[in-house]
Length: 497
Image: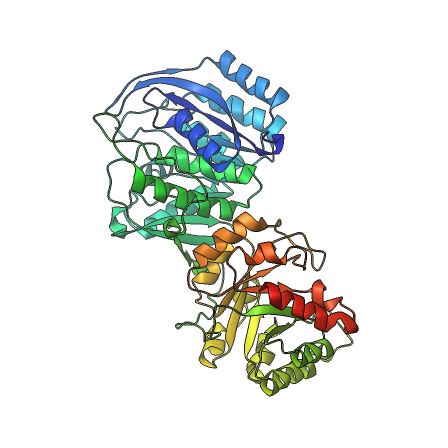
């Protein structure tokens, strides 16, 4: 049984040809594992060649559908496609503000069909800008739709970004401009995401196919479905991008005209996931990015990887033969952090072990530590180029698809994937990722060594290791262990990994 916590509404027109609109939305939402509910705004007579007739749903019926769903099936996310009349737009805007805010609202500003037919009233565009845009969690125009919304041609990445910023100025929380029609981009298609504090590009090899019907509807619905299931917007966008890439590769004709994008099973194979480029000039100073890959850790299998908060426990583990460790000192006023980093580095050299220093990258650099481990926020402050040039290995924390892609672009020495299970060790913004996601992350990480972290103990270590990770990072399982039980615990973990 699907929980009410994963209900996703789609508010759009019906496509009698089955490739776009409500029909595509429901297929995408179901593929992601959410439960679709629909509000039909218009009935279209169309096939793969043309749209021959459109009839908007009466305002009475439109209101009745919204009220019926709200009474029994409230949404966790909403996708809005074609709203053909000003009346529908203004009513939904009021309804959302009164009954649904702050439910994530994904707006796919459909105005023109792929065959060139206009799908909305002339004044509906202005009503969308005035009433819907300020409510949007995300707006997902393609190039033609962005041109309509902005009122000027979009013929370069520069004008594309200007158009996205214009929508932000009108009140949209975030904009995702799809690059499928941005032919100036060449063989690589780039989807650009812009918000007040984040900007990035997802890049994919352009798929040469005529069978693209319903890609916009499916993309927006996939994002909404992922958010209904609890994913943050960045992770939802990454998954939707990969889902559409796979769908384009597998798309085929059904009628005489262009066929619909295919709806494939999840998880999407790793080969369809995009590469990430951040657009730092839009969000702040450009950090120091290493031009080369970081020094390798010599093995894909780092094995048992204890994370400890003091040098004494680190020393004890080294004496037991542990070869990969991390010193993580957090908010301990009585600890001389610099002395601890120096001692840990010296011990690592003495035992020929891989000792990583958490957070304190400048000290790791100063004392020529084997490696440093950084969180996503730390990446923006650290001098990554200096670390790479000094041969300091880099491990990066990740908590989802977006952060994984962000780590991969840096070509680090290893990637930490977490948190797998609930953990009281630190306050986490992200939810536990679980074993299914962990296995998928390992596949996407390809040849980069991986470390699983978060809530791992001897009871679940085997099933974590079976996901294909090369290392198990443990905190409480070793840190809280009594000294006389430490050797037994290490031996037990070594048998697993």
